[in-house]
Image 1 (cartoon, one colour):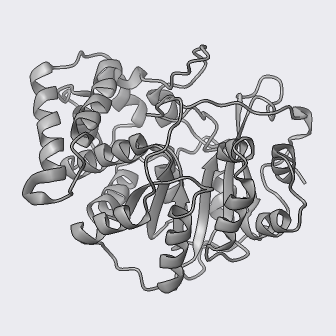
Image 2 (image 1 turned 180 degrees about the horizontal axis):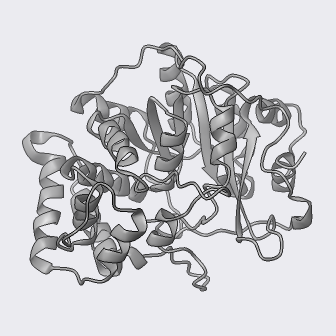
Length: 374
């Protein structure tokens, strides 16, 4: 389950903008989108959506427990000025999605990944959010460390994470947290998990406990340039403003409310597959909802290599989108200028991409990346 990032050659010096032509800025004071999604899903409804939308477990050659994209907040201000609040968010991968969900005030989110391992990561997060009334408790449960004294509502993310870096895991507290996670997910038959889900969730949790705030993405190709959990949580946009879910108690509370309302739904599926995106699109259309943001990371690169690009375009065309619907993609190495991060985040218009994809204007991953600098 360790995520690989392989990107074709690109002319980095030409990447001067992260926004493609065709996405119209919107006033954030505009009314939120109308639709008929409920304000919360019951536990039964939540799992019905997981089961209905999911495809068979796929294979990828890495675990992606945390992001490897240290520049993912750079586009947040432009994203906030482009996307009308109150839409539905689609994404892939672990908790970097939370930042975009909060920034765009999404009413609900569906996070689709080819690996069931990612669904398990999000179930772990879900349980921990529900168990933890504030950020300090969340980190205590996540890292298996007893809460240090002096942490409170006003503590910066850097203070919280530094405090947890300084202490070792507590085996008794870790066991208590692990039991609480399992109980939260299964007590009373809440979610009918597979027999192998709870052991896998416990193993994922153990990775967070062992490394603490220094946990980082691991690639089989080697190298340790990837950011740590702490690096990601103290990151900011280019103006120095932090948008992360651990940046403030307010951000944390908003996300916790969504998790408690079962509004962040993890799905197993391939972006070029035959069920996940199609079923999500059909469900949203039935309920009069619109996709506001689709975070794809660098999955498009793999869709080309797997011969699934046209299927992905067809799946995206079936989603309910409008002119402000925005795709967020990541480019590694080949989009970076000297001295910049190896990971560059780019924005694109979903409607324009569908048009370009269905009319033969996009024939390679190079064409995809080039769209983001026009």
